[in-house]
Image (cartoon, rainbow, N blue to C red; front, side):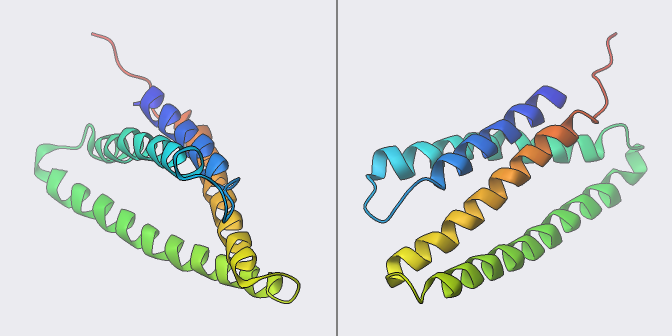
Length: 137
């Protein structure tokens, strides 16, 4: 599990870091499609693996309850994360609105959010080092 989550976190870091470099006049393929595909790989590597880690080695009678708790925690975390990121984006855009165009102000808000999520990808990669090692045998 550790290598998959580590690789997924690295994909988040690289994809969102790359996406934060996009501007209003950037090209689609190099500034949006490329990083989005990298982020999609990170999602595919990270979230199913974390769910499997949450339910690994759980007694059969408790698997449903543990899976439900993990799913609930994931959904609540996403909701809180969305609220934090939307607040950060709007605050940054509002602070940039006085001295720049509305498009540039909005882009500054998104740049901040993409960098915050890139940092989250780094945190996921670092925390993945705490996952248990695969047992042999």
